[in-house]
Amino acid sequence: MKTLTILFFTILLSSVSTDNSSMIGKTFTSHTQIQTLKDYTKVRDTSFHYNNQKGYADFGLLELRNKKSTLIIFSSLKSNQEHYRIYTILDTLAINSKKNDYISVGACKKNNVFKEQIISLINSKNTTDELFLKKIKKAWAANIKTHKIEPIKDLSSIECINEIN
Image (cartoon, rainbow, N blue to C red; front, top):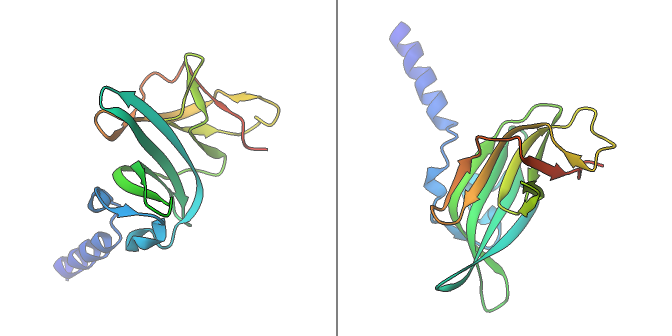
């Protein structure tokens, strides 16, 4: 009986997996075109450009939310003939936030320089009058060279525009 119980919970847990690696490389013009994203609602997105020796490259961060969590999708961007954005998923970040948490995407600066590729989890309690939020709990940056969302260890130099009110 114990084996059956363990097997049941293993099957149950694997059916609600939060591993989003199967989405890497997929393309879409609307997130609802991807089955695993159909129950998410778009919150916001931002794009940023990178000029290298090969020319310009466009990237984006798309924030989606459902009842359980927030999902950030880091993607490369292109336009089709109809001028719709075509997203190619490079990496994803699932964030489980609490009641007083606020997620900032593309509205933060590091060392007083705005960096559109920063994602921050902020404690928003008692911050209604502040222009910039500085109670950063966690932060990540979309790395355009590695195509990964990477954690930022030193949070002391990060502050984000207060978009709460």
